[in-house]
Length: 106
Image 1 (tube, one colour):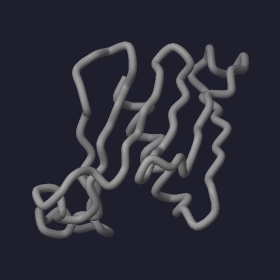
Image 2 (tube, rainbow, N blue to C red; image 1 turned 120 degrees about the vertical axis):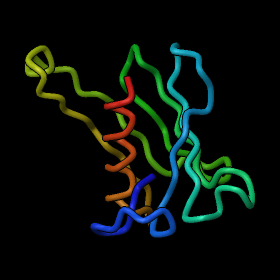
Image 3 (tube, rainbow, N blue to C red; image 1 turned 120 degrees about the horizontal axis):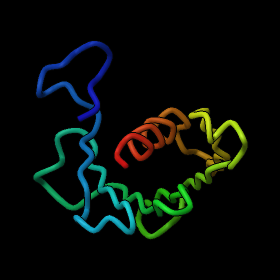
Image 4 (cartoon, one colour; image 1 turned 60 degrees about the horizontal axis):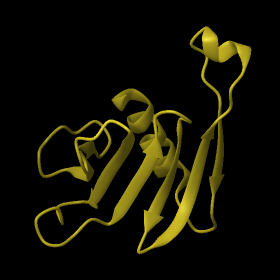
């Protein structure tokens, strides 16, 4: 769960993220906004590949953001670099939050 501000109360969260499947070849996440987790299907789907460290964020069958790992010598030292393409009218902070979740989930 990603909470609003400094709150950690169960009813004050922005979204819930859960793994779509247990396969380790691809990392797939489903994102549910607010408390709509139980009401209907996912609001966003994040699909990516561990081998290329890239992923796409999809809303209603439309790609709204793409993230690609930028391989550099710094990557070998733990300094990760990404190229992020966010389409118009999409919250950049939300995409960066998903980037952090994807990067830390492997």
